[in-house]
Image (cartoon, rainbow, N blue to C red; front, side, top):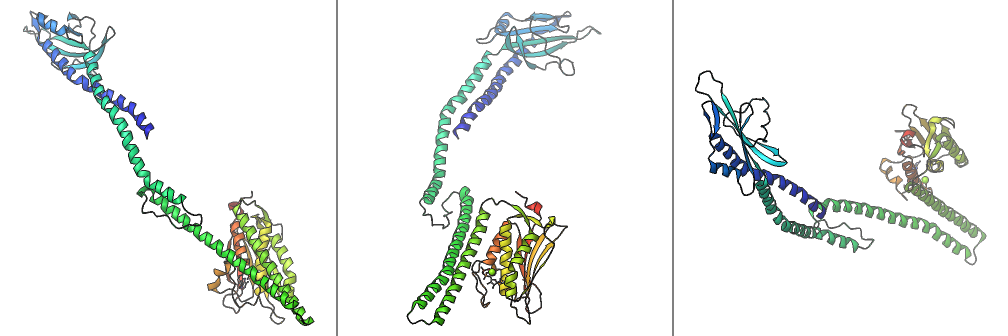
Amino acid sequence: MLTPLLLLWPVSLALTWLVAQGLADKPFDRALEYNVQALAQLVSLHEGRVQLNLPQPAGELLRADDADTIYYQVRNGDGEVLSGERDLALPPSTEDSRPPPTGEVRLRDAELRGLSLRVASTWVRFTPPQAGAPQVQVLVQVAETRSKRSVLATEIIKGVMLPQFAILPLAVLLVWLALARGLKPLSELERRIRARRPEDLSPLDDRTVPLEVAPLVTSVNGLLGRLQESVATQKRFLADAAHQLKTPLAGLRMQADLAQREGTSTEELKRSLQQIGRASKHATHTVNQLLALARAEVAGKAAFPKHPCDLALITIEVVQNSVPRALEKRIDLGYDGPPAGLAGAVVPGNPTLVAEMLRNLVDNAIAYTPSSETEPGVITVRLLLDPLTGFAVLQVEDSGPGIAEAERERVFQPFYRVLGSGVDGSGLGLPIVLEIAALHGAEVTVEDAHPGRQPPGARFSIRFSPPTRAPLV
Ligand SMILES: Nc1ncnc2c1ncn2[C@@H]1O[C@H](COP(=O)(O)OP(=O)(O)OP(=O)(O)O)[C@@H](O)[C@H]1O
Ligand SMILES: [Mg+2]
């Protein structure tokens, strides 16, 4: 605040100087006008000749002033100087180039032998008594130097400036005091934030802060709220993950203890080993899914390098790799889409992650679609390309029980599993799908594959935006 105040000071001085000069001119101009009118009254026409009847003391008075030199001049209509100072110039001609009317006094600034002057001029006109004789015009001018005016202007400036010397430091002091007072609640807020423990994400009290800062505190509170939510989600995720891992590990230990008991038959030993095999498979699967989710999340946090992903190629590979599992369950697994190598099927992204996403959907379809010799399950993996809009849509459609409308949002939450499917799983497949889709700017939807039919079947669609929206890096 000090810098602008100090910068404003010279500006205010310059303005005061201009105003003071205008003010100082006024009374002296009035006196000058009076002088020129008085002098004009002394001019007369005597037998056709112009005369100036200047009494001696008046002449003295005109010439003498304590501070300024005064000049006068009388000229006739031809511009010939009749009396007074010869070098005083004529007034500049007016716009219409006619002399001003009789009695009107004009003021102007002029110079005489290097001196700056203020000049008042007026015209006197006489009509000679003889009929037909031309009118006689006389110009009367009185000029004075400007010392009185400068002295008054300086006095005015001094009168204004001296109080400013006192006012300026006072203003600085007041501003400083006001700022210190106004910022006190902020320092208090800063102290409170500093004193917080890292885990304390409760909102800041916005009642004790100045009105101007309230929106800032509100937005910080909004951020704290979101942070709290995100921390809570992470904590919940960790707890769920730990629980998911603990269960199969506890099963492993129990089965190992059972197997080590004395007198265990070969049959029981075999069963325990089978259980151990299943539990370790489940634990490995959960760990793999957690790692896949972590990989997708880590990729989303860093600037994620994008490569061309041929959706047709990736889909065909995933479908081929899943054929043995589908055959095992007597499921008819097929691919419906264009061959690999088509330009329209290439989107920017990470091919490994896209394959991971698709594998999860196909795995789900195989796992949750019942199949028997009489009623074989059907899974179709489809790739649709829209040449007009450039959108590419991947679909995984099955003939299974489908997903009830109420569950469609929840199945995408980590560790959420629909009860009663009788299938082992960790509940992380669809969150992985969602995370990878988001990374690629794609949208995931789920609907009934055959609405109205029983079972309706599930259809998961992943809609990729045209490549122009997400350019290759
Ligand atoms: N194609 C489908 N048909 C019917 N239900 C499904 C289908 N896909 C998923 N679901 C339901 O959604 C739930 C969540 O699926 P998700 O893939 O996230 O987990 P999961 O399959 O149980 O475990 P994971 O995939 O990690 O092994 C599943 O438990 C299942 O009930
Ligand atoms: Mg799954």
